[in-house]
Structure formats: structure tokens, C-alpha cells
Length: 323
Image (cartoon, rainbow, N blue to C red; front, side, top):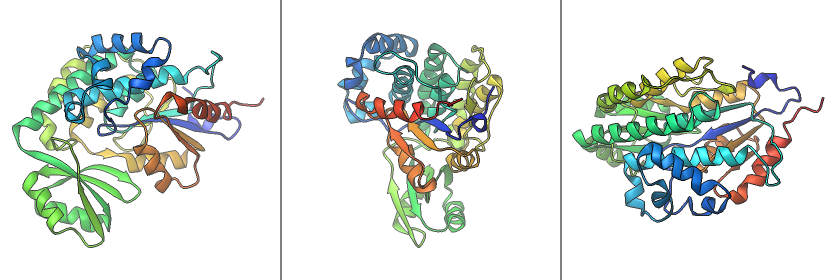
């Protein structure tokens, strides 16, 4: 497998796949106008045993906030975007990116982009992941909040005092924390100096020990899947490192359910690899926003609708070796 550093012309473009919370009502509507998109989404719906066309076009915000719906919907959107990203509007091929990574459930999308999982296996896996995490979240009233700014060490000390846990180290001065609602309310009422606490609209303490009951359910489905080794540089949320073996990445996907997302380390690895451009798959915006703060000056494209595809294709085209 080639690495990001192997690019001959110094242009290193990576694709990133967003996680839960990036979905909005109706966001898939413009995608269904593309040739073959409706059929592809119907195929993914069958694998997930969920009507993704309905949820991506007409379901309201409360409906698609449900973890068991949100996770398959986001991964399906990413797979649909990957399909369109691979060819220009005139049908001509587009250079492949140097690598790929996903945030939280976006790692399943990234596994498809890297060739580790088939689209069908990815949808089977994410559907069970969503159901299992929703069931775990229903056992105890928990939630998540974003902590913006402040000293990270002081924030972590405060979390320990309140019985809370870090869930997403997002970089760019943002840490998402999780735990029981009383602890989150106490943090909001008495925040660490220099921080803002923003409650998130999610029904569970994801990526913490509260999700332990979900791990074995996801592991059981993963055991039925035969992954391939990645065909692109593939970064893991576990520690920001690259993973060369498909089986190892699948194991990390399972463990990630109850372990923190280290997106800060992933972006640090992007910097070490000399990344010169970032393309975020639909439903895009959050990861490009983090990159603008942590990877200043690196061009990025957020693919929100098909209208953003030409800009993404142009960024990839600029990375094609000239010799």
C-alpha cells in the first residue's frame, strides 16, 4: 500500500468522513437527482434494513437524531459521496486521494473508501452499531457537551471531579465530554475558567464506558465480515496512527465504540504527512471547520451538496503526478 508521503508532486490530498451530529433534515434530497444515486441509496437501505431515502429527504430533525437512524444515514451519505467523487461530471477518472480518515462513525465510511469494507458490509456493521449504542444509551440518562477553549489539563481535572469522561479530542481547542446528565449540568453551571460549555443534542455518552454493552454486539457482527487490507493510507481515531491491516482496523472500529476519538492526533498525523488539501464527505462542514483551526492554510472542500463536487475534483486533479 502506498503512503501519503509517496506522492510525487508534493500534493497530498486526504478525504475525511464526518460523524454523528452532522446530519440535517433533507440533506440527501439534491443527491438523489444524480444518475444512479437513488438506486445506490436503495441498495444501502436494504443492507441497513432502514429506509435511508425517506430519512435523508423527509424525516424531521428529531427522527434523524435517533442514533439507530443517524449512524447508517451518515455512513450511507459518505458512501454516496465517495461514489460521485471517483469520477468527474464528464465521466473521466479523477486521481485517488493520498489517504482517508473518519471521525467516530465516519471511520466506517473511511473503511469503505480505503477498500477495507464493502459498502454492504459497512452498512450491516453501522446498522448494528447504531442499534447497539442506542440501546446502551437507554440504560442510563447520559449525554455529551462540547467544551470550547481553556486549559485542557484543567478541564480533564474538572471532569474527574464530576465523574465525566473525555469522548472526542477534536483539536482546535475543542473537547467533547460525556457522562451522566447531573455531571454535565454541573459543568455547565460552573465551567472551567476560559471555557464555554455547549450541550449537544445526542442521547448518550458515546465513546465512554457507558457504551461497553454495545461493544460485544458490534464485535459479533464484525466477526462475520472478512475485511481487506487498505488500498490507501488509512488513519485511525485510536491514536492518529496509520493502519496497514484490514483485520486490525476492523478490531479498532469495534473498540472505538467505547473509547475516546483522538481526532486531534489524527490531524497532527495529517500535518506530519505533509497534507496539502482536505476534502470532507457529505454531510460536510464540521471536520473542515476543525481543520481550519488546527491546520491553518491547508485548502479544504466541504462537500455539502453535489454542487461542491467540481471543487473537490479540482483539488484532486491538482494532486496528479506530472511525470
